Image 1 (cartoon, helix red, strand yellow):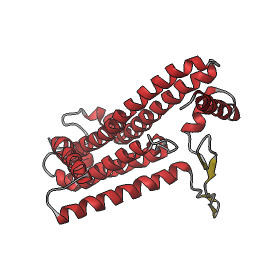
Image 2 (cartoon, one colour):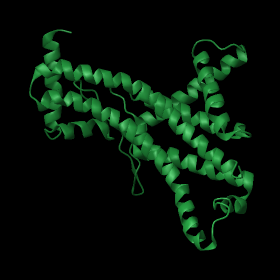
Image 3 (cartoon, helix red, strand yellow):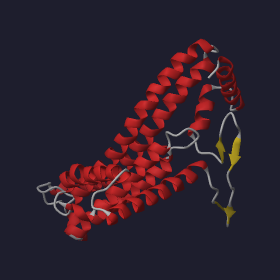
Image 4 (spheres, one colour):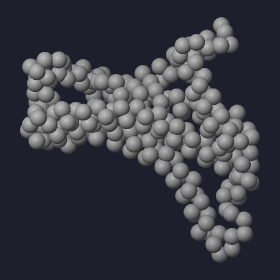
Length: 282
């Protein structure tokens, strides 16, 4: 890339920053938050359909679009992998990678944290792991969006885990037995009302922590990258560009590890909570 091309791109980014309030924070939030268009700076943008039905806003936003893409990509890849197993018991290409990841979730997450009966919950854990993983990696592609940096998406994932936790506990211990088992044995009678409130709050803090952890970690990495790039405009100097871009590239490479790590953490914690509810008597 020539010096003139580099200068032109930086000027375009600077104009984009000015167009969104002129401050670094406004420019960063513009690229982090959801929007009704796809930005392809410096080439322009594509507006997304705006749909309003019976007073509800059903518009297709950038995050909704990439949420659909992640789901469709997951279904497509899983169908391809399953077909490869029908043709041969020895997978090839992408099937080998998926087999390694599936065995990892089964042997390193589900079995140790749930134990006996883990097979019932393995389909959900695999779905959550691969969806989060694909969504995180998709968000690293230029001009795309990370749907797991949207609190609504992570909240829905956490709600699914919440229901799986309750279903696991009720299916093994019964409705009355499960909620009775939330209270530790030997608690004095006068502490029962307090413990009941604490344990009920604990049921909701677990999925809340899952949602916030995934959302915060995926958002933070992108904010750091854009903040480093915005230093060029804040300091009004092109001499800062090599340092800012170099550090941003380092954080970008680190985000690849974070994408895999956050999929693992969400799945592992969900599996751990399911195991605690399922084997409540242990």
